[in-house]
Image (cartoon, rainbow, N blue to C red):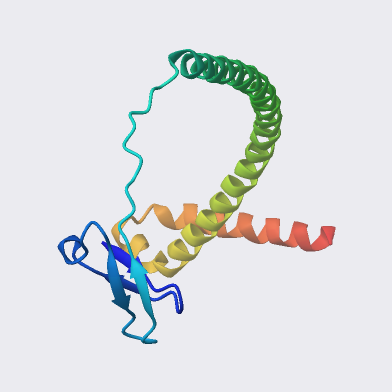
Length: 164
């Protein structure tokens, strides 16, 4: 059992068998205060529960909970409807953006292919010019074709210069 000194409020753990039913004097180990201590008998009456009061309060709590659940369901439905509306708007915006992007992509793809074609064509001409003599040795009839190709390229070059 735990006993508290009335003078300094220090708490002590004392065995129940050390204090008789009629009580005894105790001395505090901290402040040396001496006081008489008697074990107080606790009320051992049996407590009766009032079933009606408890059941009514439980029923009220249940009703309140049901009302709260219904309110939450209603707010959840409202929120779900708002979310669905926002999703539909976002989908419409994304569809509009994808249509716009597709037209941009088609235009940019055309110019990308055109640039790749021009670079490849220039690389082929440089390769033919570099390997002109070995090609003529292997294929003697190709000399006239290569000469005409280079003359045509010279003419195109002069035409472009005149335009500028």
